[in-house]
Amino acid sequence: MTCNVNYAGESFVIYCIRLRPLIIPITFTSLSLSLLPANNTMEYLLTHINRYYPLPAAAQNALLNSLEKTVLSKNEFLLKDRQICRHLYFLEKGALRGFYNSDGKEITHWFAFENDFVTSFYSFTTGLPAVENIQLLEGSILWSISKEQLAELFNNHHEIERLVRIAYEKYYIRLEERFVNAQFKTAKELYENMLLQSPHILERVPLGYIASYLGISQETLSRIRSQF
Amino acid sequence: MTCNVNYAGESFVIYCIRLRPLIIPITFTSLSLSLLPANNTMEYLLTHINRYYPLPAAAQNALLNSLEKTVLSKNEFLLKDRQICRHLYFLEKGALRGFYNSDGKEITHWFAFENDFVTSFYSFTTGLPAVENIQLLEGSILWSISKEQLAELFNNHHEIERLVRIAYEKYYIRLEERFVNAQFKTAKELYENMLLQSPHILERVPLGYIASYLGISQETLSRIRSQF
DNA sequence: AACCGTTTTTGATAGTTGTCAAAAAGCCCG
DNA sequence: CGGGCTTTTTGACAACTATCAAAAACGGTT
Image 1 (cartoon, helix red, strand yellow):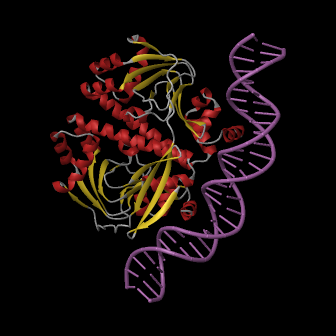
Image 2: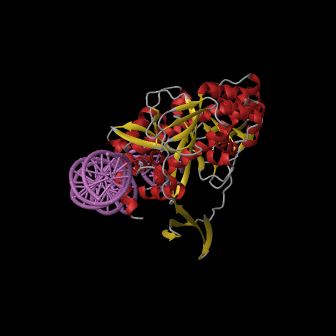
Image 3: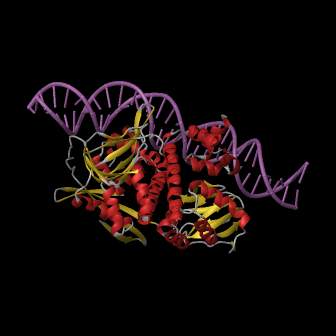
């Protein structure tokens, strides 16, 4: 709803927006935590991290000691919208999706698989309530660190902050590329792209989720697929 | 200027935006570089940076001593595609656009204005040739730092790396929001959004550039505008 | 193997937006 | 003030995709 006004020789435009009421946040059903992780399973994380930026031993140990293992089963939620996301996760095994509700529909806007860092980035960095949900697509193993612990690591180990800075660069570029593709490619091109660049997603994720990830309707995706 | 209203049990927020008259752009004839910038003009940068993360004096000085002033005039290029972007810029005054060529068309995918950090992020961080061009929309004043100098600052001043890490977070969130909007809103909603969130762009940038920025054709944008 | 709920496909239709082409408006400069 | 270039608007049409509805396929369970 808008309205144009002229006052004292200058133009103004007035907008009126309805503020929707808050929805009550829902809590986790079950969540298992073990304080000290077994060393053997954390090698995935270290190997992966060293590809971003190799950490000195002291920083590595500090990082490992700050992580908690989280095991969740299929369809559980890691986060629901309106909650504040206080942790950053490393996904060792499994698959997740991030989605939000829009006009009563679930819009999946990202997937995460093995070796991905996962969080509700907006909520985690700003400390404000999340607008998205994070749900398990498969039973998964995650390693979590709280925002406070991470800040502590940043203070004590410059290298860890560097690692994160470098990780951000990779993730930014990834998003930028997705953005450009989403905006200027046809539905068919998007699907072809996905076939080429991330066929694993197609194998592990229901079609409906993939459709909204690509920004097209499920029916359109189905029709495109039948052409291949 | 905003105002909250309660009507029939629901909350509304009212925005009033002044449509500012166009400012006459300043033109510069040629590229000039001065190694040591006058302190008075760098206050913009410092003030802005302190909003991200306040730097200690030593880090501030080191940063300022690494910056070079660059003045470019309208329509000049800061970067052409296939070049490697070796600098990060802070835009003190003026306006730029980033665009790439696709099927013989120029696709503008970002704008930068006062107090924005500017670079071809992909090329700068990876060291690979840029896929985009950066062009001046107005005569502009920029402060530049090379990738090597920045790395040196990171090594000597943990706080500067932190500042950049925090800046990345803001820019990531900004891109994420744009992405979600671009993918799931209609052309009209995108235009309304722009009216609300960045009306200054509409005043300073030709319509054709804005259309491709929003991911719609110039004709569609023109038709939407006529409805207001 | 049969059943039930979920996911995917198919069909018909309508709406939105892009494209091409031309007219109109705006702007700079002499 | 007028000419020439650029930018914006308007019109007609085609293409693509969303939507709604229903059928088919799939997957897990008994």
